[in-house]
Length: 261
Image 1 (cartoon, helix red, strand yellow):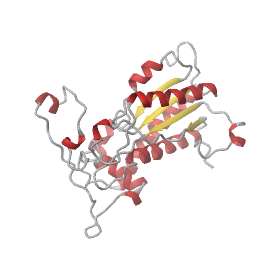
Image 2 (cartoon, one colour):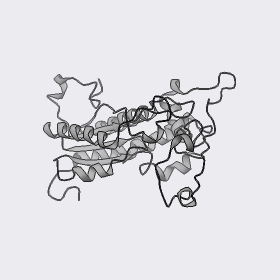
Image 3 (cartoon, rainbow, N blue to C red):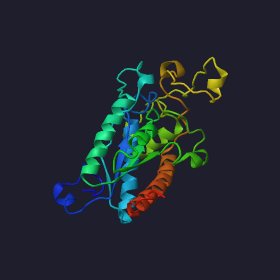
Image 4 (cartoon, one colour):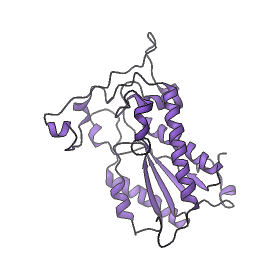
């Protein structure tokens, strides 16, 4: 039994060992090029979440990882079979109900650990602000938590099923990463993406919801072929150090009228 994983602990333990902080990993169910599993985002969320909670727990923080949510917002990938979508409003209701549960059980600090680029939770944090005693925090591990080190670890991190996600897969769920049996290379295309007809969109100063079937060939955005398990482990080491350190600080911080300042 890992005492920081809610799905593994039992009531006999929980009733005598209260927690201060909850971590909610958010994943997705969607294709990731030809070589990574549909559950890639959820596997990543579980791998990262369990390790950061373990590291924080071992430093004395009373943290508990909730079971990962395996669905996310997929409206722009629905042309691909078995992409499973939850609309943003649906996800907001689900998370709101879980926040209410935490409040009922007097856990007033929650970190949403997001592993899917289609999930946008900042509006939800704003909506729940002041409506619940639970203090909410958001970490998109593939954005701010690791943005400054990605260029030093990866040749080209990629956007979706690229080098970074493939490296994490090779390190932490390698049996689900598909290789060509004849060559040993990844069974994946090069992750090339198509440009829109608008320079403003292509340059990034106007944004859209990208229709993934027009953007990509096999859903991959970013070349995965330079990925190695060593790069995946290197990224994980950074994430564990940074996010577990935050959890330790969060667990120790009293909630008062100036929190979080």
